[in-house]
Image (cartoon, rainbow, N blue to C red; front, side):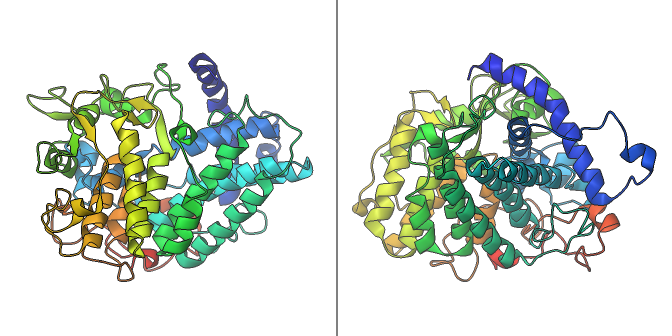
Length: 485
């Protein structure tokens, strides 16, 4: 699919997605009941399942690049808030009005509608894709907010104010949804969705692999390392299988949302000055670890002097945040690092190093999230066991045990490649929980202020106003979530 085709598709789908999402949101909140409104002849009442698929994909793409993702990145100190609202966010100053589900749940509703329409058409493969999209939506919701509506969600007539399911139950339900999705996708189909599927062009093998990587991610959250390994081995197996959102150069239509924020609408509000990301990258340049040089990746992420003298700015010129940069949702790098971490957690040291080396080999080629970083200053040679022993080149912290040194290196590489993905915030919280082996192995990410770590998002004000099942008293941003305790 060409960029021109994608551009045209985004133009056509933007209004459609907005209208469908708005309709579902209003239905969920039961706001409009007057007959003259509910019978509006201009309302979107029905849509072809393939068109609905495209609109839902666009919605899922949006919620992986939105303000929620920036706040998560600020709270992991991947970037820093330097002005206006984002300066406050970076200091953990948020309220219920700073968060919203006005996109999240309507998009999930569209994913559920795909499944219903696919059932009517006897198209299990399309239903399975709809289930994967639903799982992506709810996985984001529960990872960031904890207890969320799921069992009664997307059924506004029967459940206008859905209950909030316990977070651990939501995780179990998501795994079941993905199991069903994988089974459904491994079925024949009559409809060709290549033109509407701007992620994988209808390649069902890639969809199944992505579903397995998502399962592996959720099992990693749950501390179920055996199952995380099992599904990572079935997950995204090559760079070409990355679940990337394509972008173009038409401002306001199909540009990367990071570019729009960093370069157009809020230049200077956020950047890398005072963030932990440049500090970590610099520690991997010119160090005793002669097998690693991340100068190229530093320059791919960061440029200087765009918003101020010597400022460290997101590279919107020729790097990770150009207008047409693809945006990652699930990737080969993440999949292999799940495999690496889960393996070392259960004492599969050689398997862990091997999985880590696959990521290093990919980075050595210059590949990251659909782009190619500069060749100069790019070195990722394979590690061996001795590199992680006391005094080894990949054990600068002088951990006593090899497992600790490997875990630290994996967490560092995950932090780096997950830039501008909310999964980095999940890592930030989960590595401290008591069930994790080597619980003290974590990156020394500093707090921006105070002595309390942000642990969750606050429930949105519209939920507080409209759903009496919203938890009360409201947990604040420092209240630990069950999955990460």
